Amino acid sequence: MKLNIGNTIILSQALKIHAFAPSSSFTTFQQRQNRHHYCEDNAFVPRTIYNNNKVSSSPRRNGKSTGMKMMFDQLATAINDVAKNIGGRQRMTEKSISQALKDVRRALLDADVNLNVADTLIEGVKRRSIGQEVTKGVTADQQFIKAMYDELLDMMGGDSEIQNKNGAAGGSIGTMSPAATLAVGSKGDPAVILLAGLQGAGKTTAAGKLALYLKEREVDYDAVEAMGPEKARQLLTSRMPTRNRKVLLVAADVYRPAAITQLEVLGKTVGVDVFSLGTEVNPVDIARQALEKAKAEGYDTVLVDTAGRQVIDANLMEELKQVKEAVKPDETLLVVDAMTGQEAASLTASFDSAVGITGAILTKMDGDSRGGAAVSVRGVSGKPIKFVGTGEKTPDLEPFYPDRMASRILGMGDVVSLVEKAAAEVSDADAERMQKKMLEAKFDFDDFLKQSELVAKMGNFAGVAKMLPGIGGQLDNGKIREVETKVKRSKALIQSMTKKERENPDLFITDRTARSRILRISRGSGNSFENGVAFISEFQKMRTMMSRMQKQMTGGMTAPTSFGGAGGDSMDPASLGAEVGGVQLGNRKMRRMAKKMSKGNRGGGKGFGSG
Image (cartoon, rainbow, N blue to C red; front, side, top):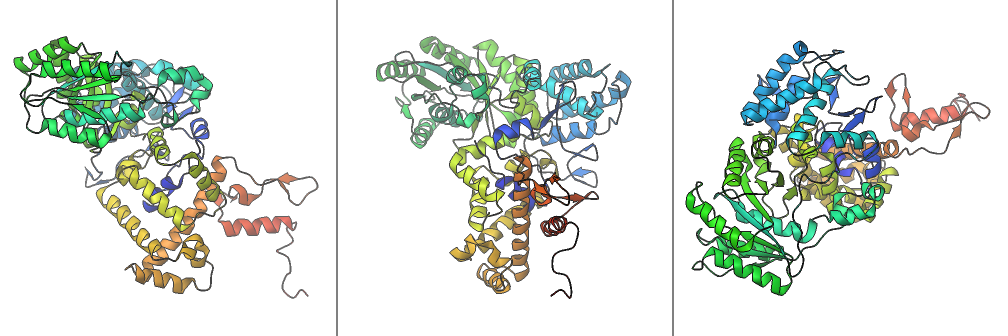
């Protein structure tokens, strides 16, 4: 999968942040530019963004955070603030990290993490840290974050030992399978999935989202395993083979007004059949008849949407037990609202003890700035989180990856999910074509427009930027509004250009008619001349940056050129960006230097007064 870096550059340039961008191929991204790195002893260490060896944190004004409250912002900011104060110690002792552990514990409790889970987490971090020498090549705060990462990973259902082993062996980090998968059925013997929960948690919507996921995006891990580890490691999740189940939705909520109608609308939207018998039939009979229909008509999966209640009561539990007895589900998933914090974990434990569940679906994760539910559910109930809802649209349901979630909680972004979102929107051929144009600095205004639209398809700017390591902590409401305004302004300016101008940006940069062209498109788009000049200037900088980054990340070097000596082969300084005296030179200076060196330091050709 060839991945272009245009969307990353557009975001970073608009935000005025020189962000780290993924490489042009996912394999290179995994091996060279992952958010993790390895020390001399192959110890796996999560990489966060450091400025002068400090962990970057949210900007603050008058002691109050101005960052947008998005997924895990509160917890990520607090943990990073603690880590950066650990300092450059050579050895972790109980005394040196005791205050940090207290601060992390306070941050966990503020994030509404269950008390017992928080204490267990702190004990685990202490056990992994105390007495450990700081690994050569990393700082003490990085090693502390590493211990936090491993403990969070284990707490949420992952396995840090396996991940560290795979990482040290050169495996793909961040592409592990989810913490739990769903039971698989067949025609004539369908898998039955029962959805339960309280009212208001988004159960019916989750049913529609899950049906779409099983129909189109569920990875067939049996087929992936048969491919072999080497081949599978090269694939993004969005490029792996899928099961493409035939799903039947069952409307068994006969109490809530319009619940059946809502499920029927969702079913029509996602292209999945819905079975319903109206509001006068017993839910147990509805579920039983739906299962008979599924067996007779070749469905391999049955999704049963049961009724919810305002509180847990005996009637709700008894009805769930009767439905379970009638259809004997392979999976019983509890749908819980992530914004309820540790109460979601307590609710999961209550349902499990009453009716028995196999896992949970956390909804409204995009609105949870604390993260208490994600951290607490498995620790309290012992049941895994299987899916998370990340938005309001039907495709906004993702498998729960403990490693990616731990990375987000610690403020390290989630580049793997970002790459997969981009891969789902762009074909390999289009990405390869775009990569070539970037490498050759032929990126034009039409390409810019396509990249901007791609970012918009992947979600809002804030959500996409949060997946980039180091950028999320620098976002605030004003910055996001500025980005959105710039994108709209840029789109208006481009749409005021002629087709020839869109395909040839140099008409606005080097052509003698550049000023009049900029003036025309500025007026035509309702912008000032200064805004037009600023956009063209930023576009040129962005195009140069893209070309330079692609060359650096793909190891793109021009053919060796002999400079000033017999047989002295050297790299063309224009190929990767020359650095003289510690100063990065621009394109023009690099060309001049290269030309001067090719002349044997005799100047630039015909001098003053030469014939």
